Length: 108
Image (cartoon, rainbow, N blue to C red):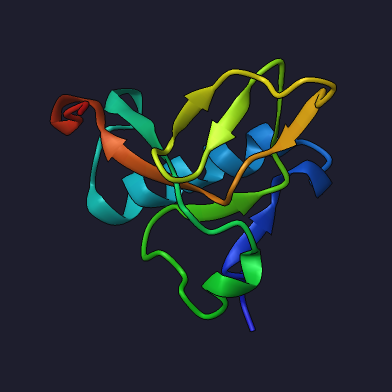
């Protein structure tokens, strides 16, 4: 029934078009100018997409299937960390992609 709560971004043929569609949909619904809109990305603490079943965002999406190469991810502090020895690739937790107006985006 409709779009899934979590999108496996690595499984899409052209993921850029899906992300562009998120922005366009939010702009059309909220009346924002498309050229003044951007994306806000937030890493969640969920490592399994099943934890977010049924928790769809009103605008934007949860995405999974992304990896880090050359760094690690600290789940407790939600930040990058040094890469563990002999660990080349690290799976990122589920991310939130939220379309926002560029003028209203306040970085932390």
